[in-house]
Image 1: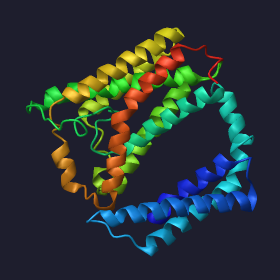
Image 2: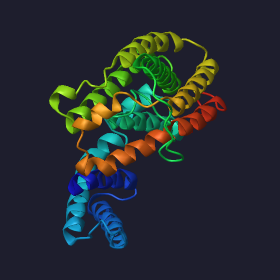
Image 3: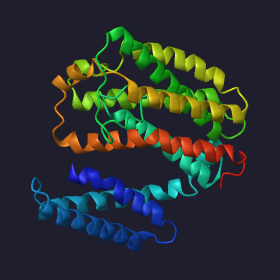
Length: 299
């Protein structure tokens, strides 16, 4: 786990340093940066009663960073000015603003790794601010909440994709690709942390209804004018976030936890929940930013 956790660090360090540093110098900088981060974290663990700093962790972290840096050295030319860069330039609007939007979409895919959250649901602040449970209700009531949450977030993300797409691109196919990727990530997450027969536990009645309604609405909504799309996406995001925070206890949660042994994934699950809680608010700010700028001026 330590090796795997530092592979992205080494890879991203190489891509961030390119083209100012290349070759051995960039590789050394990535590994040194990983060493500094690892030593600081291990030293901080000395003050946590439940954690034990070890040299083995530092060595594994360095190995992961070195592997990621080696991969970065090989693939960075493809990203910066290479085929991937050309695909990105052809498919999406240019500039740093467009890049930030793509990061938001990647984070949205990342939060699908939380197996106990509602499908596409985000913005639940109760665990951070005030863990308050509403009174239990009949499953039929929860199904309607799950369906609206799924559909609203799906449409909002589809409208975000449409705002990021370059003129003339097949927006509907891009939306279907993003949704399919999210469902694959969701299924893979359950395959890792639960037994094989539970990999489609996310496909509840509410999720099915939300997917069907959301896809139809999303494919229709991308034809709206750009300003209307951004405003509609913002309204849907906030409505779904409010509903998530007011929803009753998840009747499927207890059954899920019976077969989910978090183990080493406890901290990772905490990270996905934190990103999930903050994502709609960051996305709302980004939608406001998009509304204030023209499509061709996102840099």
